[in-house]
Image (tube, rainbow, N blue to C red; front, side, top):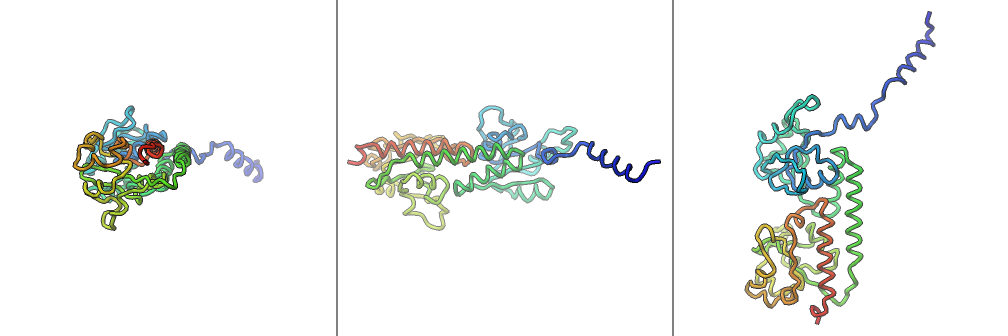
Length: 305
């Protein structure tokens, strides 16, 4: 005859002998195995933190990393529900062709609302207005995909890069380094209130676009050629070298630009449009490029005569 105390002991032993579902295993059961990224920045981040194998489709503008990028493409500027819901490979562990997670940076065609209505998780990561916002988005993607440690390591690395670059700028109380940052040949620019503008401000430059900004331009004013020439910037950044094939030589041939200090002293700097417009893992590279150009200009004695 089994006594009650013996039965209780047996039940306790059996419970202890059963494999427990650890938090990591429980989390793995809910992690997305099919991700659609409709943001080039998010795509770069996902692959950088180790979530690349989970990504099964990206937008047409995604071009980094150059290897192992998902081949299925969706037009993020004009997406359809149909192009998204049937994108995933089906398997015993993922019987549905619908993605587990869709990341967007622009809610075109109200795609967020439409996909959410179908039970698909959609995360919108708009253009980051600050470094803090950019790093927060990286952390978020790490948590959503099961790669929080890799995301945290990336964030720490980017913070360290920015701190080192800012600290490397020599003190220049008597030098006002005026800067023009070009987004396209029609003179759209950025102010210090934008993401890249805040990086430039941290390096101690004076952005000529700040003086022409209004609340209506949201930090992206359109300047005029006459204004840029009259402001006479000592440093010019070109973030339209890929989209519009702009070169320092072309800038020097613009009306009046031959007299601009940055042109005369060869401080017109080419940037990679993609790196300059995305706020993901290559942020450190952009910061390095900006820092090198600023230090070079500050150290050019001919620029300050």
